[in-house]
Image 1 (tube, rainbow over the protein chains, first blue to last red):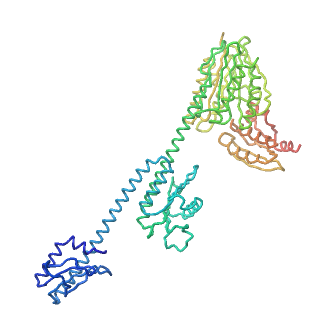
Image 2 (cartoon, rainbow over the protein chains, first blue to last red; image 1 turned 90 degrees about the horizontal axis):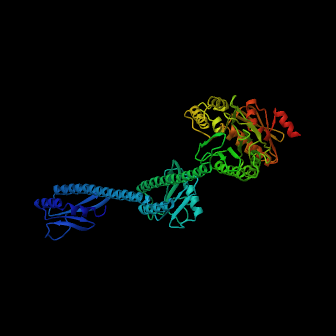
Image 3 (cartoon, each protein chain N blue to C red; image 1 turned 135 degrees about the vertical axis):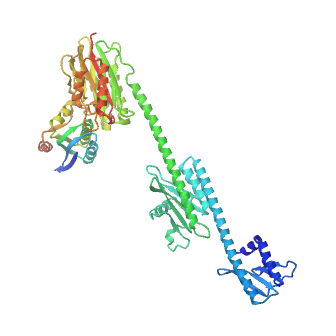
Length: 512
Length: 112
């Protein structure tokens, strides 16, 4: 409260004038105001300065702010009046002082608010969490008036990050130990005063500490520590300010993480889109016209990329082959192996001398067995060859189902596989099988995405529904039969999502 | 689906009951992975009470079979109900696995 009285005399000079005039009118020869034995003002102005005969101290609490002096009067009424005026002036001084303090606090708060606003805005322009933490730490240290500090973040699934200012105040291992020590205290803030007796709580060269844990996605996964506030300890406003900064840092880190995740997701998405395009391009782009056959084939992947494939291989001067396959597992790995299996079979069907489904299958198993075994997957594959002159279908089935054969004059039935899937046994023991394939005969080679499609009640579409539907639609074209199967499964599923790829080839004999 | 694990000498018996499908297969896969960590991995999968298998279940068993063989062991199946056996036949996995009518026969085969 030093010099509060002189400030009051300056600001309220007219009112002191009135008081002095009234003393002079009452017969006083002078009226003066003193502070620390120095005269602040006196009346009348031309009068020679001299200490008064009547003196009343201006007291605030235990402190004496100054004195009122009067000369030329000494009666008891004047003594009482001077004392009363000193009391009023001391009260007004106190109010003036409080107002002054409040004003300066308000200004300080406004400054801090503005600083936080600026900090938040500048945080947005930081491109990495590292840069943002560094920047925030520096600004926060400046605002709080601490000489050094650190900030750390320990995000899930990402590398932890520690920044300190100035660099190397503590070695990194010690700083991490300290960070965790502070963290485990599980409080809204940790304050260690310069008067702390337990010096273990203060690292070497550190006089006081304020640590604020930072919540990230509802877990304490970061924190900021302010070290060495010179001369005094961290105050309640410092703590408030530090917490306000910490909550800004928290929001900013969360935004960074979200941005990072969204970016990664978008990247993955576009890679998956690309993989999907590549995969679809590997499948036949056009269905060939084959004498004696009405042919339709398509696939509907459940995921962006799938493990199902189909192929039709019609090269001039070469026999006509088709294949359907399903790699166990889902997603990208299944998709990669699918491309391997598809290429292996296609290459053999296109270039092997005297290929048959059996030889293609055996060779493909030899090629793929080691890779598939290493990865713990296998592929069920059906390879068919149509012989128009003999009206026959030759095929090899490595563990694939459902394969449905419907001769034109009887009911549809399931054909069992003759050998295990590719990638299970080193030697596949596969053989060629024959069925007659006359006009009106139907062969449907589908994947388990049809038979194992589930509805809301978790029951499966099953083989019987497929057989019945093929009987029912036997007089339709290959494409119509395929579409009927897709729509029956979709209807059956109701709102239950498609969980597996659905792929099929429908072949129907037609008069050449 | 229920899963119990027992031991008979140096053979582990994994008994599965209920539906064995894409929802329950991960639990079986996890157990298979655990019991095939030691050599030789000798395993009987008792499927007497399995009412249903889908392709994921088959894939899980094939993976188990391969792991057992890599660990100088063997995986035997036993107690397959008709509708389950039919799926094995349809995909010819009856050729890949050695299948016994019951647990006693499967354990006997390990002794031999």
